[in-house]
Length: 173
Image (cartoon, rainbow, N blue to C red; front, side):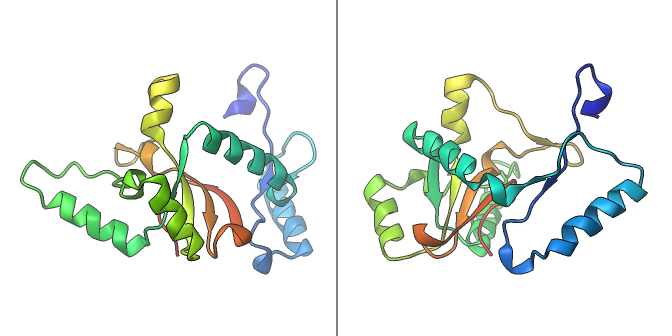
């Protein structure tokens, strides 16, 4: 754990961006439960909802450097593509996200956004890897490389109604 390393810091961050399910008493209950379990953190607990502007700036930076792209795939579409890939004769090495929307042109992307299709901003880990070196995010239980499944922000109703989120799960609900 980071706290046990030299200069380690352990922070508590509440992931509270889904406003429909957030109530003030939940923060206190969570903190109380963690303290009861013997966990203690450094500083004041952070609230993800208070950091939206920082996430906006980070996404803008990724977008400006063409390191993020909109993905319009549903979970079902992603799963169907993964099943198709797994059935290919060259083997069953299946990515977590097959990169379907990474191949869309800027005009195709904008057209889908303009008609209001829900989308998630995905990190183009291949391009990012070209810039900074190999990116690695591994699922230690199954040995799968999860780097390509990172998405930065989910937008369910076009750019006006985005739910800000960092996640390693792909697709949309």
